[in-house]
Length: 406
Image (cartoon, rainbow, N blue to C red; front, side):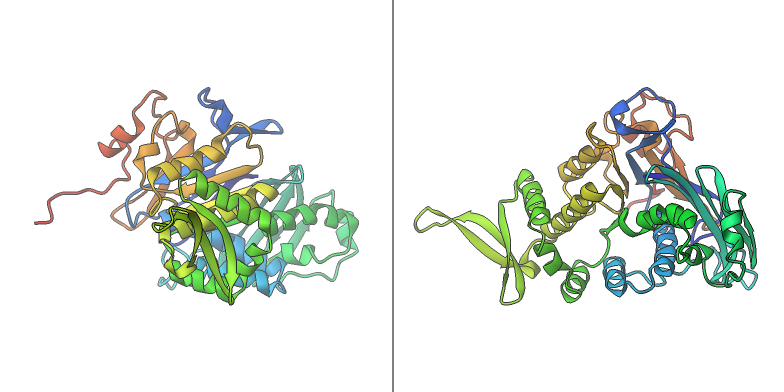
């Protein structure tokens, strides 16, 4: 479970920015909370804001942080890398790009995460400049494991004894020390690094709806992901079941001469009998395909627990579909999955759908600096009309339309 993610000096975000999943002590919508240890975490976070305000950069900050850690922890997992990069298709995905990358005096970018894995609370982060690690730290259950400043290391007292035997270990300028730590065959280190690795390898999922659909589809077919999915009938049946709930009469998915096809239940005009008509994925509506990929991710997430990071979740979804997805994450029975998503859909922007700590906004100033804040940060009342007040400009983060087109 994600507790928080902090970053500073990344793309359009210059100042310190927090994605905070800790619940504020509000009484509304208690089913939207997951009790963990002595705190409560929110299940969903919706991010609103005008175009070019930094919403995608918010998700890229998390994805770039995750990607850099993942490839250093698991450099040999090429097949996963293909899948990860094909789904995102972002330039410099695993590069940490500062606010002013053309500035010769670039300041370090800072990134920190707090999460729960296997019952342990982890706090990990680093600062990086020109792909060189400036500082790094790892804490588990409030006990320091290590801290690093450039090439100098310090260990917490719980781990100093076992690490003293590894005196020859030295950090490298462009390598995270956590990746070196995970390679050590020391029981005390293995006990903390296995849950750490598990979080970054199995608990984070992405859905970037703004990507070119056929590019996603082509890459998915080429790296064999679609065929891997078809090998899991439970995932396919789950996804088809969700599509049927939305009124899409899908029956099954088959592979015909190497081409995946989706079967629709339809009625024959000649004999008035139902039959299944199969269509190539390239002939299926983009909305249906995106729904299919979304539900496949939700299936994986539901099996493993974790976080779904979804940029522009509703650009091609009907508002009822968006609400259906959000409702699923917010239901009381959900105890182990979280959804962070951006949207322009104000039909769900109300106090029956979200707590005030579940609604965030990105805005950008005249200097090109993005900022993130929530309804809780700006002290909005619980009985406020969220969507109406947002359109009236009371919360900011809305396009300043000054004239007509013609």
